[in-house]
Image (tube, rainbow, N blue to C red; front, side, top):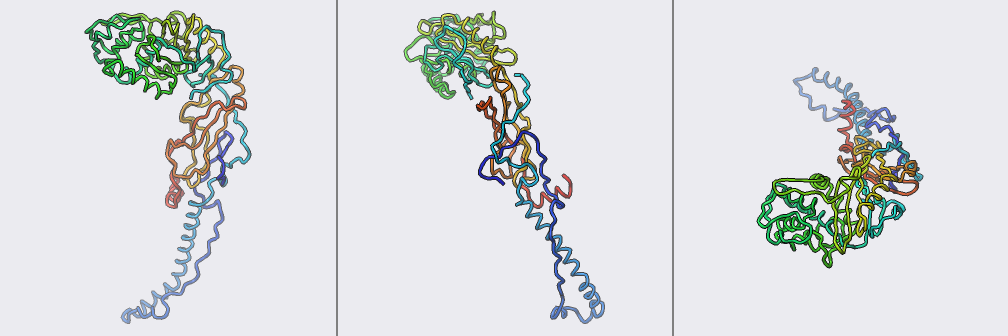
Length: 463
């Protein structure tokens, strides 16, 4: 049994070991020696009243007992050898054999279908006017293109992505928000709120994300945190938790202010998380919305002109220039784009989306729960059935689809018991010789430790 390195196997199923097979080995069982019993003083236990009858029984026992002991000894020997096999026999005898040499990549037939990873040459792409930009595949979290992705810049109203996210995380959609005089008087783009207005949170979010109301942003902040300053502290703490480490906000709406900045990369992270909330995704994809509290039209013009567009948020200030965070889906592939400091955000975003859809391919190698390997485990009643705990999907350039390969490995020194869902190995995806992705393999079921009682019971019952 190998103990110094991870087991590596070719991608095919190997027969599992029989849990117990008495005929797999020839067991050397010695017959117990003939034992003389009831000799000497023990004969005095016979009573005088029993006489010949008891003496006859004694003679019968003297002939039968050696045979009983011999058969009992044989049975005991079988049990002992079975126990030794059950607790100590190498798990890989007669089953899958570990490959000692480095395993070759395993090729899986591809079926075109459909954490942040950076594709090679991600700086290469179309010409755009934006000072900073990024394109991320939302399914796999792969950066397909970037331009100054970590450069801090004024984000304008794209700030409201995080404002809406906190409202969804900490508020209720049917909660009634009271609009303060301070909120109603906020300058800049407006949702046309008025002092003392009572408005449902769901309506307020539409005014925030469609018409980009700064007044709506402050109303949300005061309702969730009690004050604008307290809400800003929540924003910055949440941004850091989400990995947006180059982001610092000073207000919930995005008006220019010293120390208020973000990056294309950070905004893409925030948008990616916000899209996990169906309410957010539904709101930003709407062209218009109306209720008894107001009517608003989306500021994202691409909703009327680009195939598959699904929102998300525009932003414009003197310091930030024209900004746009957008998402679109075509052929099962969802892209998120960010442009900051653009002179033509609509054209820049179209170019980036076209570049992503035209030059990259989403490949699904395994769905969640697909069986990748079966192999015996030391002291286990059953073999490990290793499955993926999430879909194994990669994005590659079209010309690299034919160069995808995978390799799976099982952790060394695994022993039963194994719990269902326990990590037992990994599967790696290579593009050529470059590791592109790694996903854990988990056990599909509980595996009990092999014991003499479980082994005999299964052998006897066939269970």
